[in-house]
Amino acid sequence: MNRIKVVLEEKGIKQTWLAEKLGKSYNMVNGYVQNRQQPRLEVLNEIARILDVDVRELIMPTKDNE
Image 1 (cartoon, rainbow, N blue to C red):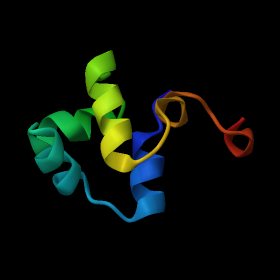
Image 2: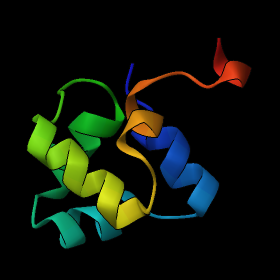
Image 3: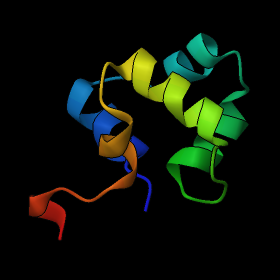
């Protein structure tokens, strides 16, 4: 499960902002957020860096979500 959507909501960040920072289209980022597409590991690491979270936060459920 990818938790990009949850982290974006927690931080009050819009998908359009993330798309701009990644150099990806909004549709690509929306695909990641909606779990229609899975980002490559390099992209996932870049998303984690941009959002200032550990990459594991984007892919592993927290205790609250188990």
